[in-house]
Length: 213
Image (cartoon, rainbow, N blue to C red):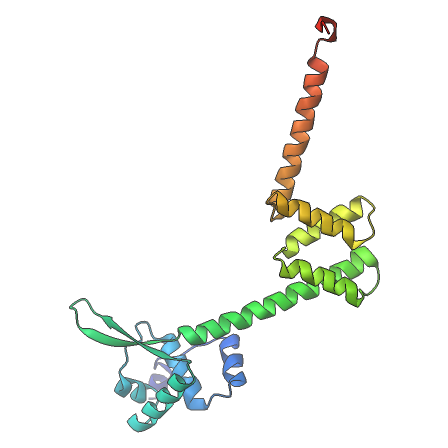
């Protein structure tokens, strides 16, 4: 009997899912219902089945479901099945969007932290001041990637530049050329060097003695 209990269906979730549920101060029943629908493959709305799987009374399941609807964490979508009948499905898109926004925000904060630390260690050799912070932050808000800013930083160091104006000019020029990644910058440099070599070859191949002018 004990072994059969542990063979029943298990519902899984991830840390971000749990953290968001705690942040929203969901009740245990609300969290369990979200987890239940997150683990369902079809999400057809059958409140009797939901109540049975979560060990809730039917009235309690209705109440929890309505709470999640009111909090806009769940939604009901009406679709047609293969036979043309209208059926109701439960959508977690709103809740997933919250999780995505949360993950994006954390990633952006990590990027900012990394890029600022890079400038402090490799460019200034000291903590950045407020004005420098605003300039670097403005590059991120303009859509310059951390990768591109890092390339511009290394270019400035290589050329012995010690101010952010130089980096700002590099980023501006790269933006005009449509360069967005390190690969773009490297390819542009290769093309530039190739053109220089071709022009130099033409110069040496030119027969100056046959120039009538």
